[in-house]
Length: 105
Image 1 (spheres, rainbow, N blue to C red):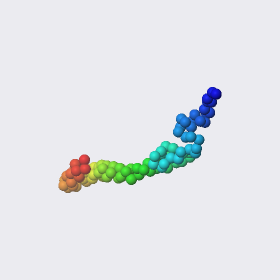
Image 2: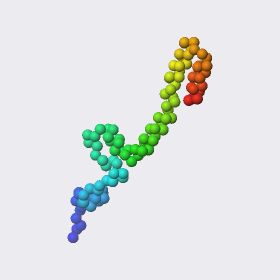
Image 3: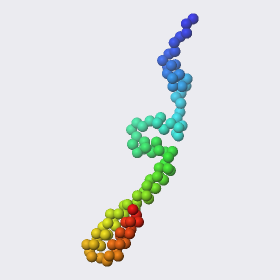
Image 4: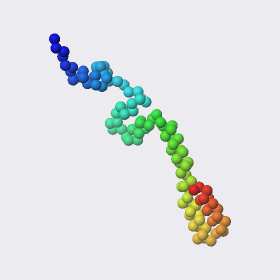
């Protein structure tokens, strides 16, 4: 007697490792790309993908904010130097502003 050929479903089940039972369920931390994204807001999708690393992501944002915050003061100190020169204020204020710029750079 000749062996019968597998059906399309049987060969697909062998290919994908499913033996005809229900589809395998994805663990929330193992397979993030198995989630369905139909109609979700992009920020919600990013929050879902980064859910395991939220603490590290928040820490990285905090460190970068602290690291770059001195540069945000540069325009204010430059304005102070310009005001000192234009308004003929004491030279000590000019040196103080220059020292602060050298300190943050």
